[in-house]
Image 1 (cartoon, rainbow, N blue to C red):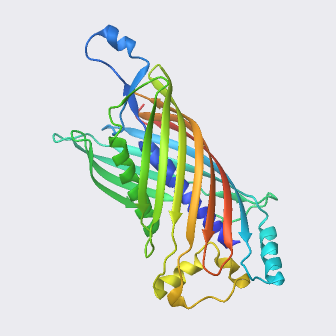
Image 2 (cartoon, rainbow, N blue to C red):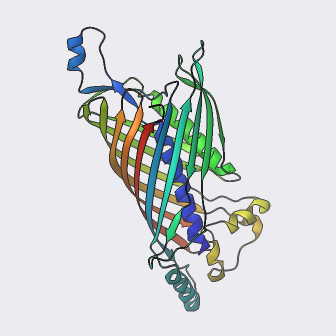
Image 3 (cartoon, helix red, strand yellow):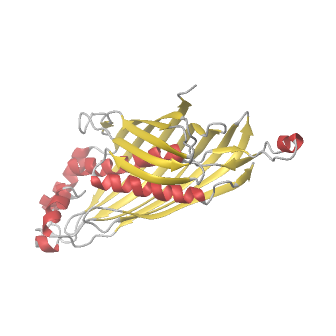
Length: 346
């Protein structure tokens, strides 16, 4: 049972980080030519993308994610009939598919900028206890499971740069992942800063990075977000959103000390009883993982304060995890995410 809970936790953690980063995703403002009022009026079907946070803001974004996950184990070559039967019994006992529901509250606060243009950004994300159930409707998993993310950054309004960033509230792997994700995300944003879009036009934001995994080879993440401007009314821009994502992590030999800890937390750890005898600890490797997914949805942004008012996203992902001497695990996930934002100063 614990193996698919751990795998679900990995996916949930990634989804939480993506939801957290959504607080910094496309903000925009109406493109307003400086020439004449008539020219400005004619530009109401055009927006100018602006991603950099504004000083003196207090935004709250609440999101809900529902995920259904199905998992199957592949028998190892050479497994006996008895071992195969035990593996099938374990899968039947898990009563797939699993359903998970979680809520996430994110608050962003920025201070007043000083004479040099410096100001502070505080981002706080907190999840409510996760609800999990199996295909029979039975509650499973830990009674309480929450994620807390704290990010503090120093920004400069004049240069449009992040001078410093500190991430806390997560374990080492997740902290490195969230910090790396946000830094790369901000760098991608700079390439679109100031770009103008007319209704029907699109902009893409690529993200290609290596996420650090302690004592491991790292995880390669590639993500492309495509934003198409649908309409602009009463200071609110509506976008059609498309997302594609791929991740991969190659297994590698690790030192014996970390090998034991990593093996106990690997997704296939609970199948050890049905797998061949473990190899020499000195030759143990990290699991390898490959995942890909596609998503689509809608997003509404208020231009004046760069606030995401609503967002809906549906995403499907497939993941395969392989570990030496253990059955491979295949997972299919369907996720629905909804978010709404408000300005706490109003």
